[in-house]
Length: 159
Image (cartoon, rainbow, N blue to C red; front, side):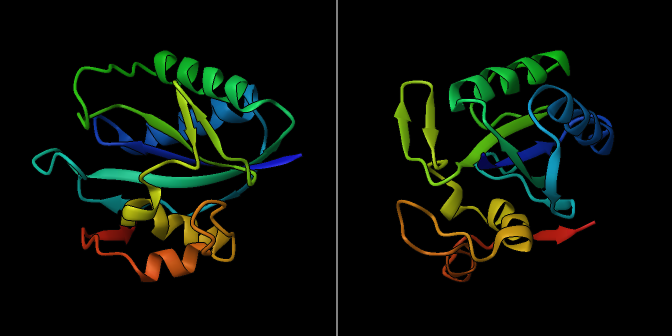
């Protein structure tokens, strides 16, 4: 079994409803939740004039290969109405694979660990809540260390 960590986020429409719907589909199509962080409201990252996000980190256990997980995630995003119109643009739902066990995957359509996670407070705050001791397989630091070294000072708060 592989422990996988997903980040889900929404900054359009009924954000809480979209997170709940994403979780329902993830549990039906990929694997049941093992752990879920609190929901955090976060300022938009990368495109700072966009509405605030709700973000949450989920931990699952699965035997599905990472590429299959990615395809299922993309299908869930499409089902919920995700449109990919601009980089860092607002979205109904976003689902990212943060970690796939301790695997390091560098493929054209999939990079794991997520290449930006160690720079983003909106990712590390909820991740530290449920997996503070998990060691980043590339950076060889645990999540709490990465969070404490952050230079990102966007506001991230539990809702």
